[in-house]
Length: 114
Length: 113
Image (cartoon, rainbow over all chains, first blue to last red):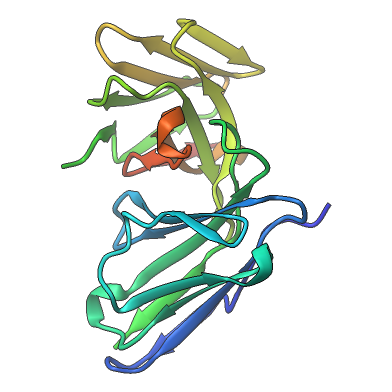
């Protein structure tokens, strides 16, 4: 079974530019989560999809962040326009059920905004 | 405010020693407490988890101790090995939150040979 994959692994952009991160969850996992770790701090929840629907987006920092999940499969997270404080590692995770249990994490995308 | 506080930030242990990482939480609604292990360039991977109806869970060399009244839980790594060197995150979640995880800040563990 293939794990959660994320693309790109690294992205360096200038302030004001747009970046789109992609996450492919484990096949059959209806639940998809985005998290972010900034500057060695804790990993923070951004949002949660159940299939194609946003279940909880309370962790999204502001309206410069837009997440989508096409057809309940892969998900994209777009940052437009990027700011310096958006730098960090963005993780995607997926799980089969909503009941508290194991979430499988991808390797992350390291975003650097200069 | 930070709902899960983790300490220490970094830990150095000799091979064969015991590594202990502590976490404290605030939200009494939390009902699932996992520990994640992360190696460089990889995503966090579930190591071991506990629910509040038990005070201890052991899997091999890894043990979670849970103190519900004190709202604390800890990870003990017995007979620590250089291959255990990684970043460890404690986390918590509760059923009605859609199981989103609230993480501690992480502990960088180094096990010297």
